[in-house]
Amino acid sequence: MAPGEAASRDGESSELDVRAHSAPPLAHGSGIVNTARVSVARPRDRHAPALPFTPQQLTRIDDALTLAGRETGVAFSVYLGELGSDTRKRAEELLASLGSAAPESVLVAVSPGARVIELVTGSRVQRRVTDRAARLAVAAMVASFREGDLAGGLVSALRMLADQAGPSRR
Image 1 (tube, rainbow, N blue to C red):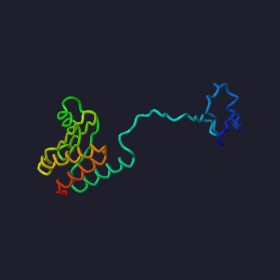
Image 2: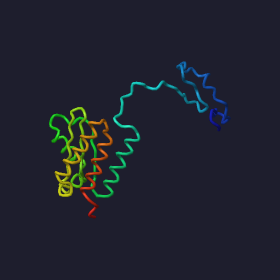
Image 3: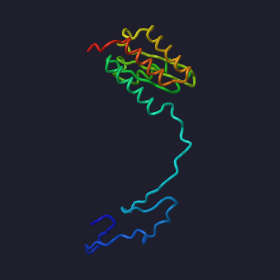
Image 4: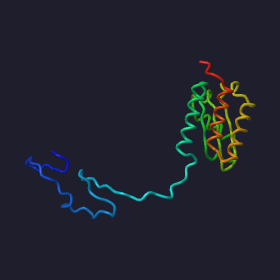
Protein backbone atom coordinates (compact mmCIF):
# COMPACT_ATOMS: atom_id res chain seq x y z
CA MET A 1 0.00 0.00 0.00
CA ALA A 2 1.44 3.39 -0.95
CA PRO A 3 1.07 6.63 0.96
CA GLY A 4 -2.31 8.18 0.28
CA GLU A 5 -4.00 4.81 -0.23
CA ALA A 6 -6.45 3.09 2.07
CA ALA A 7 -7.31 -0.60 2.16
CA SER A 8 -10.95 -1.51 1.73
CA ARG A 9 -12.65 -4.43 3.43
CA ASP A 10 -12.18 -6.66 0.45
CA GLY A 11 -8.39 -6.12 0.59
CA GLU A 12 -8.16 -3.91 -2.46
CA SER A 13 -6.50 -0.57 -2.05
CA SER A 14 -8.00 2.61 -3.31
CA GLU A 15 -6.68 6.14 -3.37
CA LEU A 16 -7.70 8.14 -0.34
CA ASP A 17 -9.38 11.41 -1.12
CA VAL A 18 -9.02 13.46 2.05
CA ARG A 19 -11.23 16.20 0.66
CA ALA A 20 -14.17 13.83 0.43
CA HIS A 21 -14.32 13.52 4.22
CA SER A 22 -16.22 16.08 6.19
CA ALA A 23 -13.17 17.83 7.64
CA PRO A 24 -13.39 21.43 8.81
CA PRO A 25 -12.16 23.99 6.31
CA LEU A 26 -8.42 24.64 6.43
CA ALA A 27 -7.11 27.89 7.81
CA HIS A 28 -5.21 30.37 5.67
CA GLY A 29 -1.59 29.20 5.25
CA SER A 30 -2.35 25.51 5.69
CA GLY A 31 -2.71 22.63 3.28
CA ILE A 32 -2.90 18.87 3.12
CA VAL A 33 0.36 17.20 2.09
CA ASN A 34 0.79 13.83 0.32
CA THR A 35 0.81 11.91 3.60
CA ALA A 36 -2.61 13.33 4.51
CA ARG A 37 -1.09 15.45 7.28
CA VAL A 38 -2.05 19.06 7.57
CA SER A 39 0.93 21.37 7.13
CA VAL A 40 0.54 24.85 8.61
CA ALA A 41 2.67 27.94 8.06
CA ARG A 42 2.43 30.42 10.91
CA PRO A 43 3.93 33.87 11.24
CA ARG A 44 7.02 34.05 13.39
CA ASP A 45 6.48 35.50 16.86
CA ARG A 46 8.29 38.80 16.64
CA HIS A 47 7.79 39.49 20.34
CA ALA A 48 9.84 36.58 21.64
CA PRO A 49 11.83 37.47 24.75
CA ALA A 50 15.35 38.69 24.11
CA LEU A 51 18.00 36.25 25.25
CA PRO A 52 21.02 37.57 27.15
CA PHE A 53 23.54 35.82 24.88
CA THR A 54 24.02 35.23 21.18
CA PRO A 55 24.78 31.69 20.02
CA GLN A 56 28.43 32.71 19.61
CA GLN A 57 28.58 34.02 23.17
CA LEU A 58 26.97 30.85 24.49
CA THR A 59 29.61 28.84 22.64
CA ARG A 60 32.39 30.92 24.22
CA ILE A 61 30.94 30.42 27.70
CA ASP A 62 30.45 26.70 27.11
CA ASP A 63 34.01 26.34 25.83
CA ALA A 64 35.36 28.22 28.87
CA LEU A 65 33.37 25.98 31.24
CA THR A 66 34.52 22.82 29.46
CA LEU A 67 38.19 23.80 29.31
CA ALA A 68 38.26 24.99 32.92
CA GLY A 69 36.74 21.72 34.07
CA ARG A 70 39.09 19.58 31.97
CA GLU A 71 42.22 21.40 33.08
CA THR A 72 41.40 21.48 36.78
CA GLY A 73 39.04 18.62 37.55
CA VAL A 74 36.74 21.20 39.14
CA ALA A 75 33.09 21.40 38.03
CA PHE A 76 32.53 25.06 37.15
CA SER A 77 28.94 26.31 36.84
CA VAL A 78 27.38 29.63 35.90
CA TYR A 79 23.95 30.81 37.07
CA LEU A 80 22.42 33.91 35.53
CA GLY A 81 19.17 35.11 37.04
CA GLU A 82 17.47 36.48 40.10
CA LEU A 83 18.98 35.48 43.43
CA GLY A 84 16.36 36.98 45.73
CA SER A 85 16.95 39.11 48.81
CA ASP A 86 19.56 36.84 50.46
CA THR A 87 21.88 36.41 47.50
CA ARG A 88 24.60 34.51 49.34
CA LYS A 89 22.17 31.98 50.78
CA ARG A 90 20.57 31.43 47.35
CA ALA A 91 24.00 30.95 45.72
CA GLU A 92 24.90 28.37 48.38
CA GLU A 93 21.58 26.59 47.74
CA LEU A 94 22.35 26.51 44.02
CA LEU A 95 25.77 25.01 44.73
CA ALA A 96 24.22 22.41 47.04
CA SER A 97 21.72 21.52 44.30
CA LEU A 98 24.64 20.06 42.34
CA GLY A 99 24.44 17.10 44.70
CA SER A 100 27.49 14.89 45.03
CA ALA A 101 29.46 17.19 42.67
CA ALA A 102 29.05 20.20 44.99
CA PRO A 103 32.25 19.70 47.05
CA GLU A 104 34.34 19.72 43.86
CA SER A 105 32.51 22.69 42.29
CA VAL A 106 32.71 26.42 41.82
CA LEU A 107 29.53 28.39 41.12
CA VAL A 108 29.50 31.85 39.61
CA ALA A 109 26.03 33.32 40.27
CA VAL A 110 25.16 36.61 38.59
CA SER A 111 21.98 38.61 39.11
CA PRO A 112 22.21 41.41 36.52
CA GLY A 113 18.98 43.09 37.64
CA ALA A 114 20.23 43.39 41.22
CA ARG A 115 23.82 44.03 40.10
CA VAL A 116 25.09 41.21 42.33
CA ILE A 117 27.78 38.58 41.80
CA GLU A 118 28.21 35.65 44.17
CA LEU A 119 31.10 33.23 43.78
CA VAL A 120 30.75 30.06 45.88
CA THR A 121 33.28 27.24 46.15
CA GLY A 122 32.72 23.68 47.28
CA SER A 123 34.42 22.36 50.41
CA ARG A 124 37.17 20.49 48.51
CA VAL A 125 37.92 23.41 46.20
CA GLN A 126 38.30 26.18 48.80
CA ARG A 127 42.06 25.70 49.15
CA ARG A 128 42.59 25.67 45.41
CA VAL A 129 40.50 28.78 44.72
CA THR A 130 41.40 31.31 47.38
CA ASP A 131 39.33 34.30 48.47
CA ARG A 132 41.88 36.55 46.80
CA ALA A 133 41.46 34.73 43.47
CA ALA A 134 37.69 34.95 43.81
CA ARG A 135 37.87 38.70 44.45
CA LEU A 136 40.09 39.17 41.36
CA ALA A 137 37.67 37.14 39.22
CA VAL A 138 34.74 39.21 40.49
CA ALA A 139 36.64 42.43 39.76
CA ALA A 140 37.30 41.23 36.20
CA MET A 141 33.61 40.45 35.74
CA VAL A 142 32.53 43.83 37.09
CA ALA A 143 34.89 45.63 34.69
CA SER A 144 33.52 43.71 31.70
CA PHE A 145 29.91 44.05 32.84
CA ARG A 146 30.33 47.83 33.05
CA GLU A 147 31.34 47.80 29.39
CA GLY A 148 28.23 45.75 28.56
CA ASP A 149 30.16 42.52 27.94
CA LEU A 150 28.39 39.95 30.11
CA ALA A 151 29.74 36.92 28.24
CA GLY A 152 33.30 38.27 28.16
CA GLY A 153 33.23 38.89 31.90
CA LEU A 154 32.08 35.34 32.60
CA VAL A 155 34.71 33.86 30.28
CA SER A 156 37.50 35.95 31.83
CA ALA A 157 36.45 34.97 35.35
CA LEU A 158 36.33 31.27 34.45
CA ARG A 159 39.82 31.43 32.96
CA MET A 160 41.17 33.23 36.01
CA LEU A 161 39.56 30.75 38.40
CA ALA A 162 40.87 27.80 36.39
CA ASP A 163 44.39 29.27 36.44
CA GLN A 164 44.17 29.70 40.20
CA ALA A 165 42.82 26.19 40.77
CA GLY A 166 45.69 24.69 38.81
CA PRO A 167 45.88 21.36 37.02
CA SER A 168 43.78 18.39 38.01
CA ARG A 169 45.18 16.45 40.97
CA ARG A 170 43.72 13.13 39.88
